[in-house]
Length: 475
Image 1: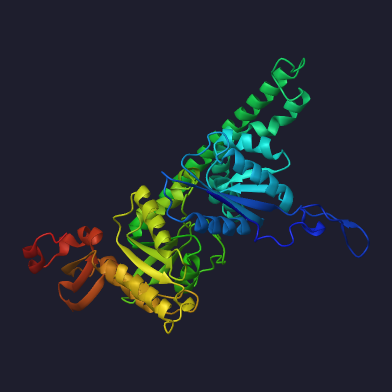
Image 2: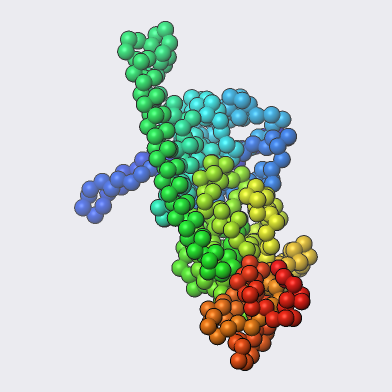
């Protein structure tokens, strides 16, 4: 079963919309040069034995948003349902002919596949469609978006490493000019004198250069990880709890961080607007200081190369004391997006972390609308610890911070201590990281009753009161 949809294009056969370069001149008459518009046809495949979190249509809608983020205009879509993928071209022979006709009809110069293509499939598709048509897959598209949005050195290194590791097995297209010189059979019987050797040598040189670059980037990333680990070590010594914001891309994590921490994180209504983690201090209702850290957004079919390259960034999730799962409650695929995030958290080994769910963008739903009201009610029933919020207008943020405060309190232990006046630093520790219920002063020192995070109990163990000693090691 298959379908072709060109409804996303406008006047596909008009002369102004055939993907041809148009001559544009400025007021002085000089020709203004601009890169040609990239016009893409999206191709989605549904495999019977490989169910996806999203339906075929919804997955292509997401791919269209990715394309838009990358500055690509989508002019058509093509889908096919298969029992098994074609090992050579992913799609069937008849569907490939349909794709070739659609490319010509709509003036497309790019084809984007929603599934990751093997190097062989990409080569065969390029041969079939012509070398002037760029063939890429979802992974390459996401890598391109990451490359555009990486703003720090760490982000740039991680993206470049992922790009090289993705491209290494796909080098052959760069040297197809040698095949043309050899009459289309470089290295074959009609290859011609002097063609085969240089062709193979150039390809091997290119591979060696990329391998060297990959080794260099890995070494540089290792140094960056050392610095990040030093930062984490200092943060652990400060004993400030770490709250990691996680969620599907474009769920509103950066907007939330900006709202609660007065941060200046780039927040745009597009996929993967920010890649580099940002950490800010926030004071909770209990007057306790905590650290909030934004993380890279998740997405279904997240490329493994990106997960590996961004391991040091994603480790913020593992280091966190609490996760705030930011969900776009207005998105039609909210449940599937939640499942995708939970699946990635499982892969990262962070599924057992305490989680507070923030049902964001509640301002886009109208409680007087029965359908919207049911959506809110069902979301709260499915996620009892969820808090409806709008990071954009501040609705529900006080309740969210209180829910985070309450969740962190479960990590705290009751404590009863008398701290000598010479240890004012420990009194400050209690006020900064704990919850002081009562504080009195006598000749022995400062008598404090309250609660303290379990990891800090040991610092105050020498000053337990007899009552605390009877309770014996509350940790």
